[in-house]
Image 1 (tube, one colour):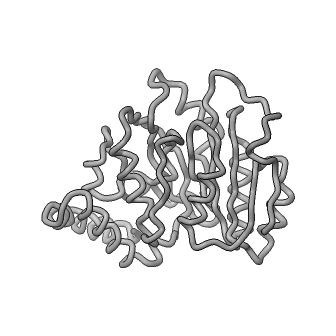
Image 2 (image 1 turned 90 degrees about the horizontal axis):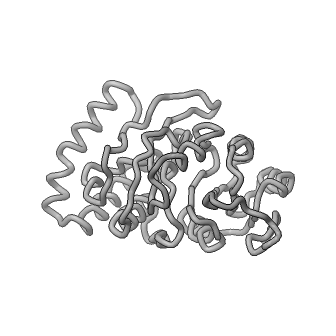
Length: 265
């Protein structure tokens, strides 16, 4: 195991009063170039209270060297083998101490430098969850377009009958409300995780902002059949079998229509 950065238990860091502490969580494995861009974008954020935690799955490329070079920017990082993406995310959540969790994985970026100030500048304060929209980007950082599924005006656990309407990178959730990811699910644990959070959240705020730039080509797209199967199981668990089947009729129609028009998922 390799670790570095400042330990999250270090009490010497002074946080600015009156502003929530944001624990940004990044998981990575053998993605040096994408991780470099992510670290650079997070370092530019115009927010005083950021605790950046990086969990690496035991990379064998130059990722570890990159983390060592950025010790001063990362609150804490660790590199060791894990049991996949969601196991790494669970490990990171256990290390987090902030008021809100924000997942920005390797290759993803905050939408702009001032996005956190924009999120917390409104009249709606101390919410359980803040959510917004997502822009999809290519490896070179260029925009592909907005995410196919767009966030609804009002979000509840019942909204997810229409699918994963928000990207989990585009939500900030109060840490105490965050359960661990179900690692028995390989590609839809984020969908299940969001469902459980929405069921337990009392105040959910639509920021009407683009919060994150999400790198195209994630695991769910590469293994889309398994991802869709697992999401069906999560929906059946929450809504019942027949309502889930009925809900999938418009989901499939919109999916095919979007693909025909845009040639992407």
